[in-house]
Length: 208
Image 1 (cartoon, one colour):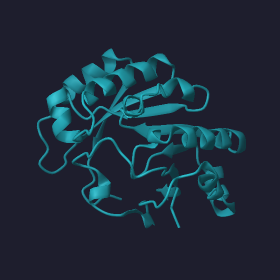
Image 2 (tube, helix red, strand yellow; image 1 turned 180 degrees about the vertical axis):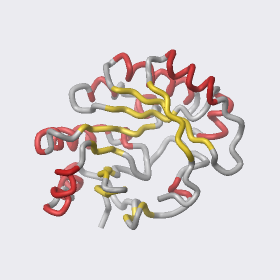
Image 3 (cartoon, one colour; image 1 turned 60 degrees about the vertical axis):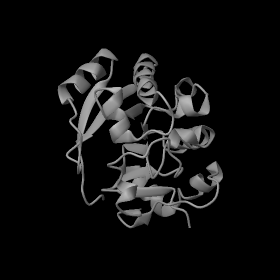
Image 4 (tube, one colour; image 1 turned 90 degrees about the vertical axis):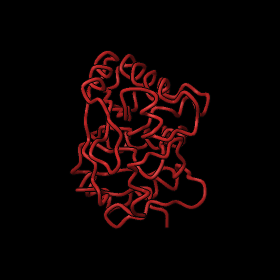
């Protein structure tokens, strides 16, 4: 069975896809197949009704105690925008106390040639975008993007997200094996100039 809904330290997450526009050198899916026992590799095409079906009685109890649910798994969630939107509408109706967060690399709109973020207004509360580096050259080393000019797309996504009124967080990861030099101060300055909050995430070597 595909694991669309999983829990990490009591917090709920939604795993929509294994497709991604990046192959980040620190990605947990290159370390292991699961997160706290939930195998996140998916088979077939993800449908909203299949995701929603996993919000069963057992999950209901855990969700009642949570304050936020995050779209984040072994792929880029915004590559499934229609599924994400339908599931978000379901969450807002059934679990109105939950804030909805998306962890994204910020390149889905460019990849799909579709301006996705405006479609999320009124559904999503927090968008966390992987900045990953202080310049394009370093970004390419860290993120190994599959589409050209990805770093510019990331910066544009951070700026757009903040302007649309989402709580926007730009993140970097430090401490991973064979990491190139990342100018943390410059990353924070870039983030602030785009109107977002900055977060430096420590790499977890063993995954979760």
